[in-house]
Image 1 (spheres, rainbow over the protein chains, first blue to last red):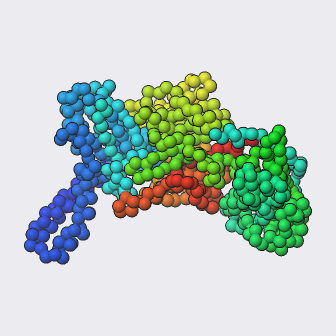
Image 2 (cartoon, helix red, strand yellow):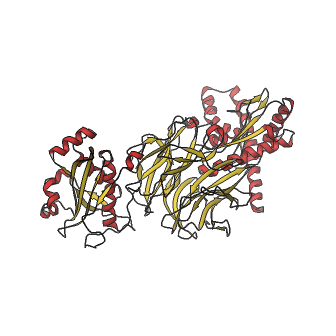
Length: 183
Length: 453
């Protein structure tokens, strides 16, 4: 278990490093393109998807904004998870605190928290995993003052992906819990 | 809907069963690379019968069609080489009476099947009587056969019953042709799949849709003792385990649980349903007795415990749990005691299903980004991977425990296009992998027991 943690931390450090390098490259690319020829512009385009991937995933948690809707103005509707994980990231907790604040101000609103998994697991296990993720989000909302009777959970397992791709980025968008207004 | 089919089969065996003849036998415990040459002669029908059957079923040559059902069944086992009818030298009626064995030796056939179809009227209703004989060509004698009488619409089932008899006679194993497969029929884009329960004959014919697709349905499983089915439905956005009678179409929720119930399976006696209940982020295994309505929790662990399956004697349950950190396979007594992990190989393991023979557990394994269907002994030893692919899972055993059916999903392209889900089958030997034809995309197959009557 401890070893696992060490690996995980090491992994995060490496990923962090990658993200920083990605940012750095982006900057240098920008400065060169200002004085660039057309061939150089083409090169930047080629490099783009890789940079994008680094910017969109931390570890394998999605951090981009594609597919993210709003529960209310300025309140994102979903949070994302690492493979097989139900742990809420710092960004997820921030999102859920925004949701909780809005729900406290709008006390007549009830919500359904829908938990989802990616397609890389067996159907039944994913149903359980989706339920676990939705409950992780529900518990956090409750910690921030939303009463449990206003929150229903519903697991879809791998049944309702938002992205139909078969690649790590698509899967990261699908590992999610979405807070949906129920009334 | 199907109850029409329950109309009496009248069996009249004119060969005493149980006597052993020296016919060629097939060993199916190994992959068979040298299939047995077999000829299925078109079944003979006289002109009057032909005319009547044509009126009833709109089929010109029912005898030929029945022989094709048998031929198709036998060929797909991979154990038989069904010889081309064009090469047959003898006419169906004479062959059925008494084959000229030299004619069949000449085309290198070792076994011959002949038959006869006659129309009959019983109590002013039309019936067909079908007679079949199994011949040992090299031994120059008849070794088995029977006749049965049924309503004309049952003709494919007669073909399946004959196939079962031939398979049993030549392999020493019970057959699996007069069976059905229930599955989830899928349509529409990957992000908005429409799913319906569907049932078909084992060979892909007679598909019927049992739900309309208004709500998501998953994981149908047959009761091993009758034609009841248990499955998961999202009716009113409340995912719950349901019980469906496929004869009457009547369905009901199983039990009254305070959360999502899923992953249902019947006990071997068909009287209980075992399933998972997910509540407050934790999934446990429960059992509900359908006769007493008593429900009982069997596991008690903060991890995900799901995909339970009984041993055929009902004494044990295998399931998967992530209590070790990742999904692994466990076995416990059916009262929930003596939980023991059995999978220790590399990768994660799920969907354990106990073989109807009791000696093996089929599973799905994910290792290095690939999905495998495999089997292991019930103590976890002797792991054998049968097939590898991008994504496949949900093994279900044929009633004789010789074949595993499962579903496979394709990888989509860069644009997220090209998704499909199909049923596949593979022999326990790891040979004879086959696409199981379905009208639509399909997943979550469950194989019925041999049908009665």
